[in-house]
Length: 250
Ligand code: GLP
Image (cartoon, rainbow, N blue to C red; front, side, top):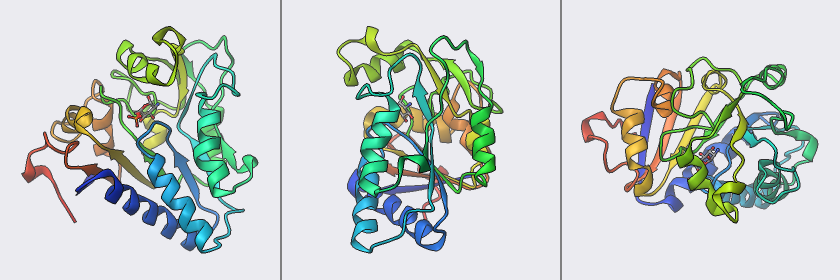
């Protein structure tokens, strides 16, 4: 079941997401939060950190699980997701790096399951809120089209479109690693709540395909229709191709 909330712009949507996370942290100081990379959630992280600092909230019991990480990219590379999560979540919130987990697989990893990460998530009590962005082809985490909906954390291959899109963070597309380890759609579906954010018209097709058609593995975002408590925070441009009768705004 997916609820959809359309806000006039990214600023308003990010403020609502930051407030949801803040409320969770205040209510449950040992909350487990799934964090996404990409440019979409960055403002929500900033606004959350501001609120947490302004109100002197204790963050020492929180736990964070990143969605994904490239394979064969050194962790100290500025675009490794270890570095990105450190820069956007760990440091601004003032949490200890030991509270933040990022999936790992050896540089010579083959495609297939990486189960230790799901076990770690389970041992932490499961994810309370999982944040997500979405790729232009509908990928969530690095679950590309065709990924089974029950996939655990696994090593998967990036599509050419995803490598092309992510090449803006690198000097060239050849530098974007072809393999990544990602929470599976099965892992994501186990979170108690999922929040997907999408902004801008480049995401409009992916959002339409996630919401307006039945779940199908060639549309990874549509797998979220199987989630028990999922909400999409969209700006008007990202929501432009979804029929209004499909939208349950509250
Ligand atoms: C990457 C990440 C995804 C993210 C997507 C969209 O491929 N693995 O988790 O959702 O990019 O990124 P952006 O938010 O920058 O559009």
